Every structure is written in C-alpha cells, then in structure tokens.
Length: 182
View: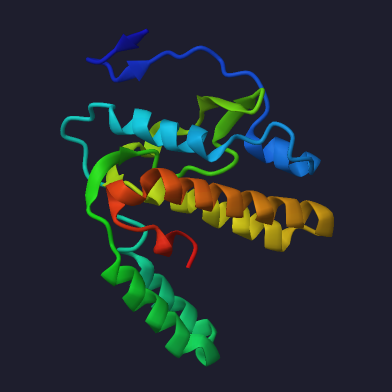
C-alpha cells in the first residue's frame, strides 16, 4: 500500500537469507547467477522516478578518493592518480535508475535466485554500471578480508563468474566493462 501524498509505502516483510549470509556459509550453493543481477538492474531501470536528483557516479568521485588515499599512501600516489584518470575517461552518464548501494547484504536469495531487495532509500538515476561494479567491489573485498582461504577462493571465483556474466550480458549496451574490476 502507498500514500504518495504522505510519502509512505508499506511493504510486506522479506524473509530469507541475504547473499552475504550465504557467502559466510562458504558453499557456492544458492549463490545467484549473473543473469539475476542483470535482471534486477533491468527492473530497476524501468522504475519511474520522475524528478529525483541524480546520484553521483562511482567514477565521478574516484579522483577525490584517489587524492585522499594518496595522502595516506604516498608511495602509491602515481598509481592512484592513474586509476582516477582512467575512471574519469570511462565514466558512464547517469542515465539509468540504480539501487545506489547494491551489494551482497542487500539482496534476499531463495533457491539460487534473487527474490528481494533491501535498503532502497538510495534508488535514483545514476550510471548503469555502478550497481554491478559495487557488487563486485564488495565481493572482492570480502574475498581478501576472509580468514578462511577456501571460502575466500570461492568468493573470488564467484566474483570472476559474475564479472564475466555481467560483461556477456551488458557489453553491447554499455560499450565495455573493463572498468568493473580494474
């Protein structure tokens, strides 16, 4: 139910584990395929948001992040600024409706399929690849930070599979996905 005049939406409860819950279990059983994320992105893009403000793209703030990191990691300054320049060259326009903070704790999974989406307060027009890149970024971090080498390797392999699947599904539409994992 919704009351647009009051700005209220009442949704039914989402039940089931998040992808993060499943990743912590360490078995690849039930992890959604790339096509599920691509379909979620397609469905979000179809949402009419009228006059909502655009969300800054992940690549648009890369230079600020690189400058900050260069201050605390001066030995990496040249590399960080090169990454920021590459990100700026590959920036996508903010032309699609995106989740804005899509990662493994935001999706409810059942039977290997995404069946729910959490934390939709950042939904706004943004760059089409930002949500998929954020998913990959979170998975890469989770793999590096995991203290179980077997689980870390499985998560890293899953991120590889998602990246390949995202590329196969989206390459013609966005003109390249090289920056998703750079």
